[in-house]
Amino acid sequence: MSEHDNFDVLVVGGGAAGLSAALMLGRARRRVAVVDGGSPRNAPAEHMHGFLSRDGLPPSELLKIGREELAGYGVELLDDQVTRLEPGFTAQLAGGRELTARRVLVATGVHDDLPELPGLRESWGTDAVTCPYCHGYEVRDRPLGVLGTEPASVEHALLVRQWSPDVVYFAHTASPSEEDRERLDARGIRVVDGTVTALRRKDGHLTGVELGDRFVPRVALFVRTRTVPHDELLRGLGYEEGDVDPSGKTSVPGVWAAGNVADARATVIIAAAQGAAAAGALNHDLVTEDVRRAVDAFGGFTPAAERAAAAAR
Image (cartoon, rainbow, N blue to C red; front, side, top):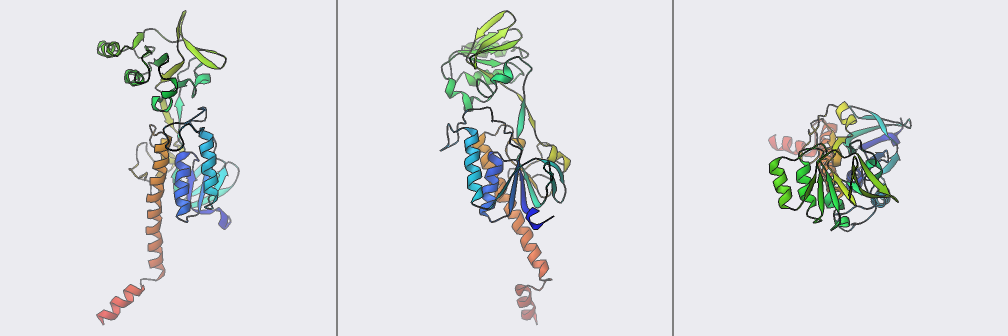
């Protein structure tokens, strides 16, 4: 292994969290490698929203801009995947390269576990979505639907109502209680009982929802999904889900986590902020280690220790 394979920090994942962390660390003059497999959660989305100064930008464009910025700080970007991460830290890449690092930041995100419904995957990220803050404004005042997949789906429908007066709650596998029906009725949200069988599409767009022989026209469907974190590498080091402090530090020494892998609800701008926060805390941890190493190198005879010894004589 050459010196070019040794880094202060290995960042696994090149989304908003990982790139933001790498930017901060590069500016702190750390030697940083970012390994990214190129499959971000928001890849199907045409635009991202709620990111100050970047509202409406395609997600891929944000990553392109971020990568260009990192190049100016000497951060090494590797389009590859970490297949094994061992304590210490040694990372084996799918392409065959092996890296070592003093610290690791994992920002590998999550994926959405979608219900098995014909047409849903084809619609996902465009007109079948989960976050109204990210996608609601673009379909405001139009016929919207919310798919009932869990008890919290009712709250989802009540939230989506903020963007349109025409919202249908499809009970599907989460039929609302009498109390919930009253709340939905009070907000003018129509409840359609029965199991959804498919999403109908035409010319690349959602046209509505099928329930057997029934059809309800809709232009967008909001779905609460089960998010599955890509935390295999973290778990291999002894991490347990949720085992992370506000700075992103996990209970595994030397390991940080940021973005959706640690917080599935984080939007792009929040994930970027979490990456920056983790980088700051991580760099301070490295500084502490650097100071300790410097003191040890003096063998205890630092200038300050010598002055104290002379004063005591």
